[in-house]
Length: 212
Image (cartoon, rainbow, N blue to C red):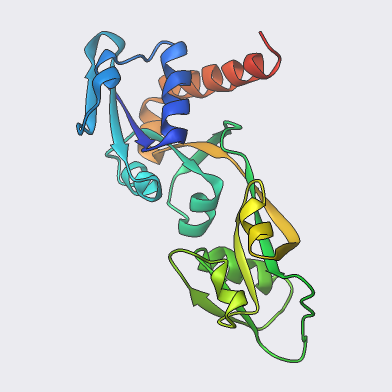
């Protein structure tokens, strides 16, 4: 069976719908409940529902042959996998934001609050900017308001949360969307099957965008 790691939530639902349309349906998925592993022997596929941030781990270690995760997680965690395709789902941007009217003092270390420490470090390293990372797990927008940080590095979709907290985007530096990844060994030994899945998914996306 082709083992596929799907992220729990809306993105996973969208990806499963795409996979079902190209021949990898699994009737059990319609009645998921609390179950996490689903098999469809007739379509030769097994699905695993996992936390989005864990998809890369399952694929890297070969538990799943392929998986879907956001570019943000891919860049933050750097799993040892192949990135096969941009599925164009869950589009958003990684951005730097700050309180309205913020003026950066280039003479001192910039305090950056973020969930994405590695992405933030890489971004500012390219600018040779000294920073202090303040790693938070949630409510990033509060940090600059209360003086915990100067700026934040976070995902921006509509920007409504920023506006409601009187924050503005200073720069957007990374487009984010769902990516199809593959285990390196699986890609070697099941290349034809995995390549066919990747091609079918990207073709389905293209046809959907064109309204066909």
